[in-house]
Length: 138
Image 1: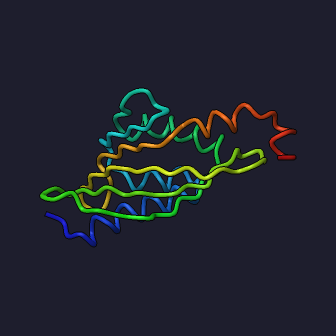
Image 2: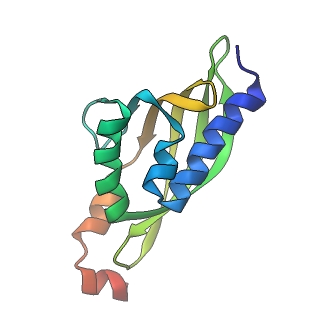
């Protein structure tokens, strides 16, 4: 069983790498057999190779900066619930919005083996509907 600090460190490292938008550095925080899910995937993504394909497209479209607001150990498990605020904008520019969400993360060693993210996606839809010129002016 991992300690709280080991679990929180693995999750924080993953969030820190998401903030860099560095695909390979982010993937290094996940196990090869990771199970990943968020509201935009519509299904579970299984395995690092599949996650790479998804994140490549996601990172090309969005600029995100996560700030952890709360973290809770899942009792009896090597996992945690982490609540966060995320400032998100389109990579090509324009306004940003803050989205609140949470991840339920399971950790193996110092990597996440399961990551289920929950957030309101209407903000992403709103930002995508703005034309690039309007997005830059807003």
